Image (cartoon, rainbow, N blue to C red; front, top):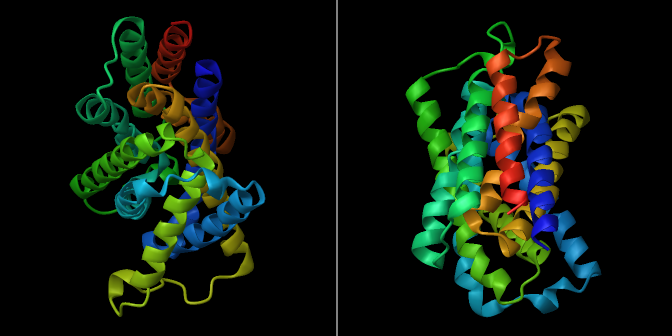
Length: 297
């Protein structure tokens, strides 16, 4: 089961890597709130249908409802709005760098609230993997790439990324007891995503500039380009990540689920036609070595 859970976390990383690259342009055109609203509505509808067809609602431990509510606000709406805002300002590579800090945050929260202690080979492997991911992001970009442009305050971009990292970590840690009690991870994802969709739909009714649509009637092409990374992220990646959290220490699951920056290297190379620097590839190798240590423990 741990091997399958680790594979699920790595699969989540792949989906997030592809989703971050696909979402950069729609986030720029639609704005953070507009993109989050569109993605959450579609993703929650798909997840509700999947869980209903699988009779997954029977597994839900409803006594854990406070966790579902808190993660909807913090882990879905707060974290994703901050993530999209960071993505718009700094591009996918920098956003992934800052948000990868969710791994140490999740490890600390897992220790404090769940009593999880990461020691020995897992600790070394997790530290190696995280260090490798940071190297891969720092040296994986190209200054001539438009996705590398910083728009606005760098400090604000970093603050938004850290808020997204903290919100993501809190959302995962708070849901683990519900899954340990028997709730199916996909049902958990459906509840948190539907809750997030309800929150953003309610916020959209408030006549404030922050919640106003940037484009009143986006075309079909833009809608599809916005929804596709939402399905990759909210539906597939989060379900895989929650499955990993269910069976692994939270910090380890988040480290493996944060490998998107490493997976992005060949993707960015394919898109831009420019090979990442040697230190980026060294970071990728270090991340793979650390992952191997975790998997062989």
